[in-house]
Length: 358
Image (cartoon, rainbow, N blue to C red; front, side):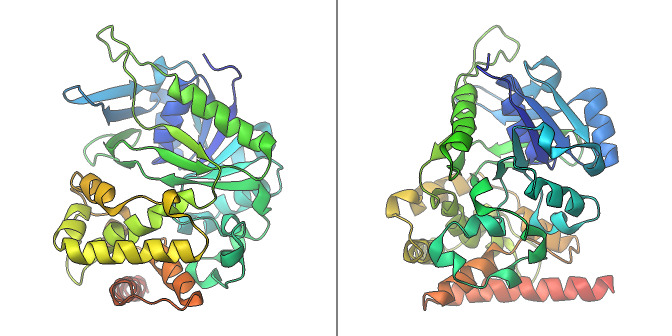
């Protein structure tokens, strides 16, 4: 049982359900902001998260109705951020400018409540905590940079969303399946007081022992790990530029596994280059993940990335970590033909989607 029960608000109920499931198993109370049809289903039936566990056949299912903590869903206008101890950002970056969500984000920004993002695209104010990035104009990399203008950088942190999960297409929207059960790696807040919340959650999640229905006590993967360095969550950038964005082709999207393993030499090259960009911005080599470890994990990623799937579905905007890395690299006099090609492909697909949308 958690030493203290925290109240946590999460914007986004898809990927947010994964962190939410771990938090309620640890005894905390979670409210997720989502669409009305999602909210109605979650409030009536809870959430289900299926997760692979080492040494066990099949998937272990977490049913929120049996958890120590509670989970509920609501619309953007139905909550007051000041009622919570921590706020999580788990939507795709373009969604924060949508009606209702944008207004809620404004209230979150001035609520005085610490905010943890689990987005691939780091919130703009988080990057202001890194001097070599704060000096660069990166607004054009965001769908609408102005939505972040009211945040105090000291009040926001970033967790690298390394775990991979998806909503099975033939199951209800309150179901999530984990395909890569790695950890959320979160940077500390500027203040010790807010960092203490993260460290308590880290301990509480670590202590979870789950009975999958056979009377055993299973240690579940997908932990929250707290780090002192603001650069640790940026380890995801090399993975995104090597795998996720290179799922985008001139034709149909390919899987992350194929993007990485079709030509390992090319993949190793772009991965190493992005790591060098992070080092040039101030990261220590120990903050980052070796290519071999990522390439091994990518073997199990048999689906295209969410960015590639969104482009195939006609999305007019997606998160642009590819463009962010390109822009920051240029500020250090660095350039990559491989990344430039990827950015060009994504730009072209977005232009095509926007033209078709009229």
